[in-house]
Image (cartoon, rainbow, N blue to C red; front, side, top):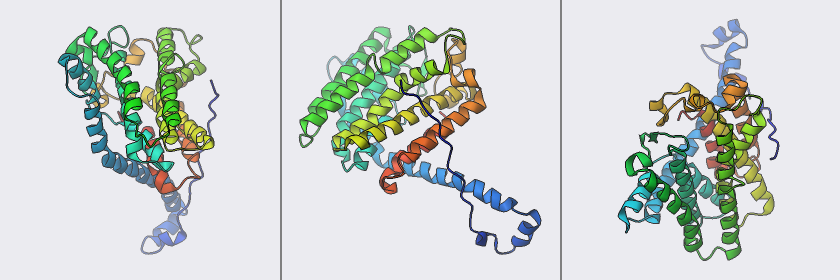
Length: 349
C-alpha cells in the first residue's frame, strides 16, 4: 500500500484594502486588522461554497441522464422478483458520485458523457451490490439504507444476495456490450480489467475482509495503517477506478491517468474519514442509515484512533492535496472534480 502524505492547505488570500473604504473604515481603523483578517478567513470559505455549487450544478445537469440510463440498464423482466429487487436498490437514489466522477473525468480528458455512461452505470451497479451485501445480517446487519428499508428487509436474504450477484455480473456485461464502438477495444478491455481488479481481493472485497477481521480487535492490533488499507480498498478502490476509467475511455495519457488516480485515492480516503466522523456525530435520520454502528460493533475508525479534531484535519489535508493535483487542468473542465472534493469534506450524510 502506498503511503499517504498530508499536505498543508494553501495560504489564505487577503482581500484588497479598498474593500475597507466607506463608512466602515473608521470602525476598521479602531479595530486594527480584524476586519481584514475576517475577510481573508471568509475568502476560502466562499471559494469552497462556489466550488460545491459548481458540483451541485453539474450533478443536477447530469442526474436526469444518469437516472434514466440506470433504469434502462436493468429493465423489468422475468424473473420479475429478482429484477424488482435489483431495481429497488439501484434506483433508490443517492448522490451518484461514482457515475458523475466517471463522466467528469472523461469530459476533462476530451471525451463525452455518452462514451462514459455505460461504465458509469456499471460502477453504480457494483456500488449498489456492495451496499446490498454490506447490509446483510451476516455483515453489517443494517435495517435502513438511503432512508429506506434495506434490500433484505424487503425481499429476504436469499433474494438480496442474488440481486447483488446479478448486479455485479450485469456490470461487466454492460461495459462490454454498451460502450460505444468508436471507443478502441483496447480501452474498453483495460476498463474491464481495472474494474474487475477494484472489486476483487485486491480491492473492495479485500478491504471488506480486513474490516471484518478488525471488528472488536484491540487498539494494538488495528493501527492507522490498517485503517488506511481498509478505507483505500473498501471505499477508495471503486472511487479511483471511477475516475481512471473515465479518463481511459477518453484516451488520456498514462501521466494523466496516474494523476487523476492519485486524486481519486485521496478523495476516497477523505470520503471514508468523513464517513467515520458522521457515524459518531449525526443521527440516523440525518444519515439515512443507522448511526453509531461502528462503535457498537467495536470497529476501528479515525475518530476512535486519533480523535475527532485530528480526523477533521486529516480530511481537510487530504482534500487540499487532491485539489492541488488538478491545478494544471482547465479550471472550468476540472470544476466538477474540484467541487466533489469540497462536497466530500462538507457533506452531512
